[in-house]
Length: 578
Image (cartoon, rainbow, N blue to C red; front, side, top):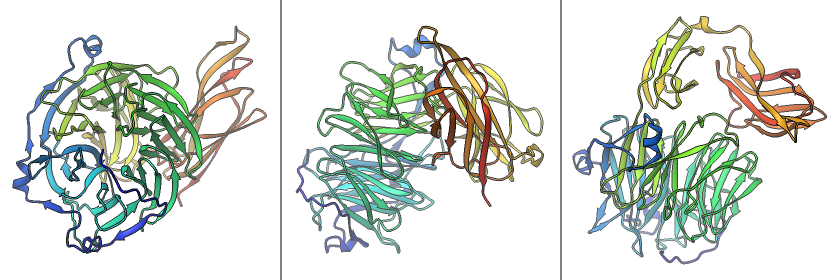
């Protein structure tokens, strides 16, 4: 571990607005920028290697249709004979940004920008080397790269810094621009993760916690002291922070009020790397030598735990519609499969099967893994970056009418696809179940739509206003299943309420009410108020907006003294975008 001068401060300081202001030298972080394309191309190779799973894996037993191909490798930067290790990856649109650092006492880091738009032949567009700083983590949002740096007090009292760099539309980073370079001092020894959303969230290790910065000014707006904070992620109203030694997942709402603290085994190794990914209301957490865990953010319940081979220490994971890829350092990458689509709410009955370890050759260490459509990007330590593509059997799409489409999924697992406008705005999605042929209705749109499967446009449709339904919304209640509970004295049940925007306007908020004589044990995809047999369901931050044709499904489980298949006084109220 690098040793740092301890500077205790809970107030973030804007260190500099220009590179020279940081320490009085022209380049205090020792950056060296490479933009020459021919030089950058020399770092990329295209093995086009088919990948399978190691022998005796569950994948061969399940005979899954999933195939993988190693399409590209990007070699790690080398500075004065020292090879850097890839530490993390962030995705934004067609670009992946990779961070690098060094083990031991040397401060040496880098940033790579990779263009993924050509699926089979991605390209490196920028390489930025720091000869006075490690780069531990990175995030990207709206043309800006946010990098967490570790330094040895270069021109300030801080050892942990957040740097913000412009990223142009050609995938080029800029160190000196008319906007200047922003660098912010952070509390704690070293920053461990960063997430750029409507605000900037940064975790720091020992003697620090979670820093919340204003997205525009980068001024510190809040600080939550959390020991051994390793990673942060947010979707909608929930902010999840993974902590170690002992392992915990701290779950906050949008007001930064702690909702749950979930104990997790396997995270007791001091200063070990651990990461999480939030999808919907589920946190997918790497739990060291215990494998991985799935946690319900609304209830703080551990939904599933997955054990891997002895000696495997998971430190990151990526989630597809129903696949999980787990990075385990020198042990490589495991894949797991669920007979469930993660775009839908997860119940306690979820089964997660470990398919096996990817058969990768000449592999160094899987430090981080992310998924974009059907492209898997792996930060593989001294081995640089591996870009792997998931190759599904193509869906067969056929228009039945101006509004109706039919889809056949020949794979033996669900495949999700979306409707997108020409500007890549998603206006709805459909899950094609395995080995089935189903029909679906195209959403109303004011412009032509594209059907996108695994990040690729596979078909298109003309915008048809006659597909619109003339009522504002459609509301339904459905009993999914029921069973005897408590030796037959009561019924257990799972039900769902579905609200669909059938208007030509965007719903900006919604509320659902109904009466039923039942007790609810779990409700997801809405906040709930229960009193005297009346249930009030309100939108969460992440599903408050429903565009024309979009739906929201609220799931629930509970018990009742009598079997029922409907509820009374079912009604909804919505606000529309004016």
